[in-house]
Length: 211
Ligand SMILES: Nc1ncnc2c1ncn2[C@@H]1O[C@H](COP(=O)(O)OP(=O)(O)OP(=O)(O)O)[C@@H](O)[C@H]1O
Image (cartoon, rainbow, N blue to C red; front, side, top):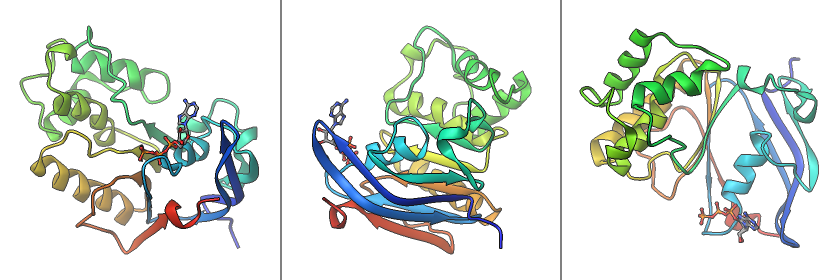
């Protein structure tokens, strides 16, 4: 039997000598969406950063496509896309330039593809203005436009709905569910209740795993 796309066993995470969670097991495969919930400070962002390889767990193992995450030197972007809580957008660059720069290293995108993604995320007409002139929700959309470009199967998204208006929230929910329906995987944190969930939806409440 093939191994799960992402498998974490007995994960624990400590920050500033405080144990946030321990003995966490996660197994995700094509089509799964994992919503990590829990109170402020319960360790949701910390868990996502650990799963994205941006932070070492205090203990436990993570395997991605059967290989230890720690052994994946620089090729993680082939399998996963991380979009953090901060939009991570450079204010002096335009939306198009930001996306070209973000994609350049692993999955270069053409100007047409980038403009198509910006149109899909509702930024038509804002492609070439400096991002510092965009609203918070528009800047968030620039970051999320990467989900409309060629992207790896696993999306790890920390509070992706922050600053989005109602229409953009439901559009993004639908896009995430469609990604799962077509064989992708999503791990996300949000304090908002999802109204569009794929069959492979599951919830992990860190409030119940608090150490
Ligand atoms: N940069 C940091 N340095 C030290 N401790 C940190 C840092 N960031 C977070 N922490 C601590 O780790 C704990 C978990 O933080 P984390 O951001 O993972 O929680 P969260 O569940 O995502 O919270 P929220 O719902 O507020 O976003 C918090 O108690 C916080 O004090």
